[in-house]
Amino acid sequence: MTPLPKKRHSTRRQGIRRATHKLTLPHLISCPNCHQPTLAHRACTHCGFYKGRRVTK
Image (cartoon, rainbow, N blue to C red; front, side, top):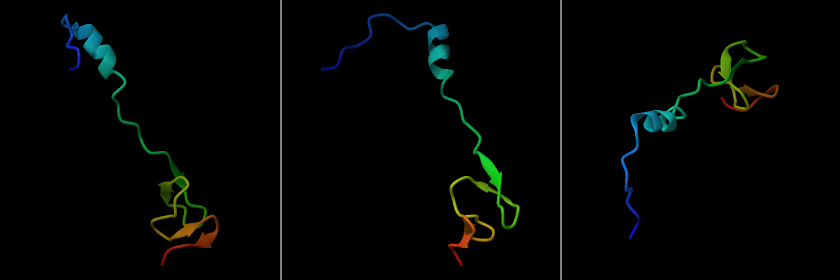
């Protein structure tokens, strides 16, 4: 069996724990080929280029 908590956690402690549960925005860069915003280290979704080469149709 797993142990159960003996005391109730305060709302402050609950808030401190939940303060780390936040969303982060994706890091976008501009594509060197078509200059559209795209995710770093991924093929461009607009033109299909990655590192100067066409990788998708």
